[in-house]
Amino acid sequence: MADLIEEGYEGKNLLSEFKARRSKIRPAVEGLIHEADNVSRGIGEYFTYEDVFGE
Image 1 (cartoon, rainbow, N blue to C red):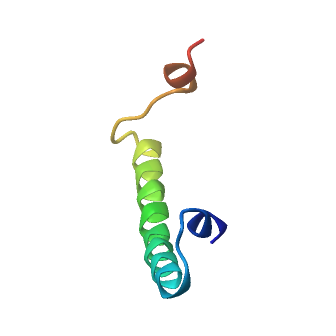
Image 2: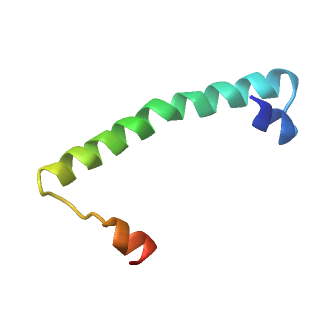
């Protein structure tokens, strides 16, 4: 909420934007869980720690 206020939202627009962003959280987390599940089964692409941050 503090981020939205900092972005300039207020009043009804603040509440509206908060609800909109909050509604996107669950689908995003479910997508991450699905990806992690696929990787654990050997399906899909993944990156190692070394791939991301080097050796």
